[in-house]
Image 1 (spheres, helix red, strand yellow):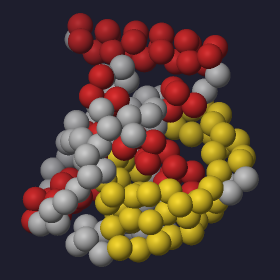
Image 2: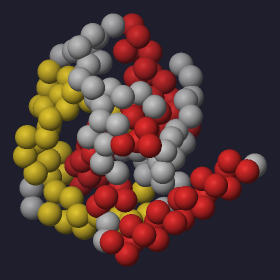
Image 3: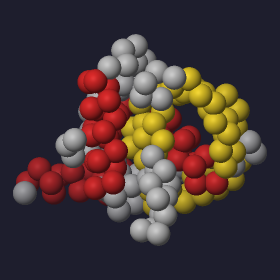
Image 4: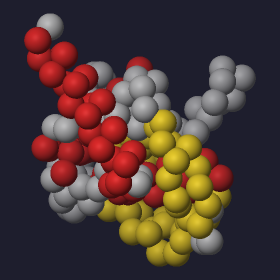
Length: 172
C-alpha cells in the first residue's frame, strides 16, 4: 500500500471523467488499497480515483468516525446513482479543496448500484453522511467538483482561495 498525492483544485486533471473499469485484477486491488490508505492519512471520509490522478470510475468511503468505531470501508466501482431522495443542504468538505467547507444541496437519500473490487455487483440504499459522501464522490467520477455546486459568489471566492493556495505551493 502507498499514500498517493491528492490533486488540489484548480488542477485540470480533476475535471477528467473516470473511465469504466473492465478488469478486476491485482492491479485494481492495489489501487483500492492505495486509495484507502491515502483517504485515511488525509484524513477524509471518501476519495475518488480522479483525485489521485487516476481516471477510473472508483471511489472509497469510510464514514466511521472516532477510534471507538470499527472501520467501515466501502468500495464502489462503476457506480450508478439509481434514485435520489428529496433534497437537503449539508456542509461538505473535500480533500481537493483543503480547508474549505461549503453548503451544498444533495439528496437526503440515495440508491446506488456498483461493483466491489472483485467485480461483484451490489445495490445500496443510504441516508445521512453515507448518502452525501456517495453523491460527492460520484460527482468526482464525472469531473464535477464541489465548486460546481455552490453559488456564483461562493464559487468566485473559493476559486480565488484555491488559486492563491496553489500559487503559494508552487513557490515553496
